[in-house]
Image 1 (cartoon, rainbow, N blue to C red):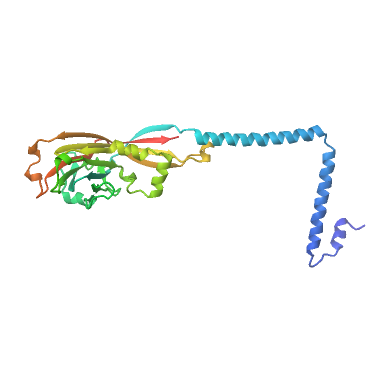
Image 2: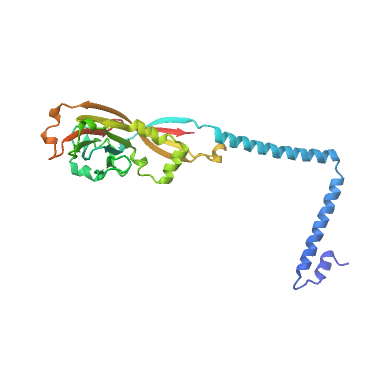
Length: 303
């Protein structure tokens, strides 16, 4: 007798089977599957089928509830901050904004730990002198911008910048002196230099971040005063909120460096503002030292 394989092999194979041929085969397969499933279900008792359906439903609800709880904790839980202190032989020189209601000029020199100063020419490229009064508040603004490439250096013994402010407004009246303001920012995260997208994100995630720094790091330079602004640098590593954090996947951090300042002022005797420190037609208003003796960086890491 011929085998089944021989029989199948002898059957004619259409050269170009029509789409209806494939459709009929598929429908036969579906119908047979339905018949098999129907017979299988008829062999099960109703409580077993109902129990399986209830179990599956409860499992799905449990999974959904678990994910809802995870999302809730992800949104509402505040991260824990871990603080560590790292030795850093170099500290970025901060950006500085000086504003006054009278026109003025500024010169600067790099200061070293042996109390010597560099020439003004070395420091001048980082200065932007006041030009016109601001239309917003009527003040004049000078800027020291370190361009994120100027550091205090412990090995080179450069630990500060010495500013001398000169009046260049003949209408100056000490009775109407509103006080010269000096505001410092970490040069790597100065809102004046950041793109608007980053500033908006920070204001959205931490609405008080820049305002707190403004309040903490804005100081008054008094007339005929020597002023010292000592900085300490901190870096906040903010955890980017993602669902992966709740699953234990290592987080992605956003880096926000900033500074805190300690400020001291003393009124100098008139003799300290002698002719050697006065430029023609520009009496010296005051001096400002901005520097550090703190060669450590505090890292605040969210976890």
